[in-house]
Amino acid sequence: MKILTLNCGSSSIKFDVIETDLELIQQGADYSIVRGLVEKIGLPGSQIRYTYNGESYKDVVEILDHTEALKKIIDVLTGDSPHILESLEEIAGVGHRLVHGAEVFSKSILIDEEVEKQVDECSEFAPLHNPQNLKGVRIAKEFFPNVAHVGVFDTGFHHSMPPYAYIYPLPYYFYRKYKIRRYGFHGTSHRFVSFRVGQLIGIPREKLKIITVHLGNGCSICAIDHGKSVDTSMGITPLEGLMMGTRTGDLDPAVILHIMAKEDLSLHQADTMMNKHSGLYGVSGISNDLREIIEVMDNETEGVNRARLAFDMFCYRVKKYISAYMGVLGGADVVVFTGGIGENAWQVREVATHGLDFMGIRIDPVQNREILGREGDITAEGATVRTFVVPTNEELVIARDTVRCMEGVL
Image 1: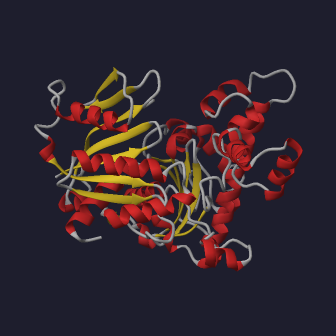
Image 2 (image 1 turned 135 degrees about the vertical axis):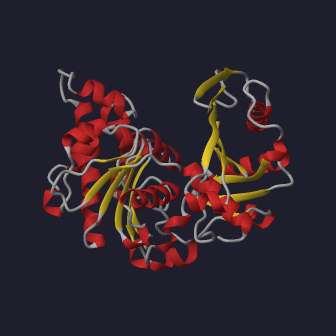
Image 3 (image 1 turned 120 degrees about the vertical axis):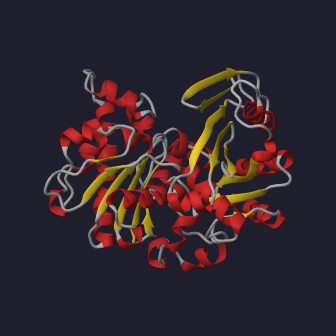
């Protein structure tokens, strides 16, 4: 059967059509038919880009809102050139990425009106994401009224964390009343790469201790003990943890109070600073894109090399979390790098694992530079902890969960 997956953002929709069913899932033989992105919705230069049969296509066209964006996706799927689907009736179900399920949703679920209401109530923890995700659900239901719609939550995988890992050291009253706690994100990515690396080494993740390192514009690390998340770096929101493209990551809360007082910042301004003006971008003053930072960091000659500083800070924090999670797990069998940076920036992998030989982590410098954007084992000879690069595939997880929900086996 064909499953459409949707990841709806404030000005974009990422989509994929995946051929899958329970038998294909069991065999690991399910596959993407077409995948693409509608971006700059409601903005100048809106466009749709997609890949089908190894060919890339792009159409720059005015797209005023998300309804028009989904209509454009449907036009692509049912158009004559390229001819992808005979009709929309081939779509058996729609899987939706939903960012925050709070304590309400521990696993993927068929979306009905009650679920929509509960997801909306979870929006207080993800005001920039959940409302947009819900918008995508409601629009998709208009175009696909007779098929199952399934929600797959970023937070779901981390529901296995123990209380001592997710409760903050604040007065317990705040957890009891407001459910203030660590939830974690990138759950579908951590799920996929931990499962996939088990396949690659021939040992199921239920028998392994794995540290998954998802590095993109957003970054998080997860400690996985025999298939279950036991800790992760992001918190109640995606702001906590590693240094990221524009987010601070871990920070003494008093720093923000001090800056707010000195600069007379509102709560909204402080929130914007931490989420959109910090991280790699804030430190380097150049970009939130690590590729650009790496390009210039060895060429700066005047004053403090802020690009190099940003790079070193980024790698240092990755190393610190890997080391911490080695302790949490009592040692690990595998470390896995994924995400745009994790899959492609060999420099980060090299620096972030340097000096961890005493933990059994050592990577092969030649293999590390050769494995870019593809699966590969970068473990050095003699290392007791395997290190892999595994490109993530969150859409495949969403499609598989959609099938399982439809078949009643999740």
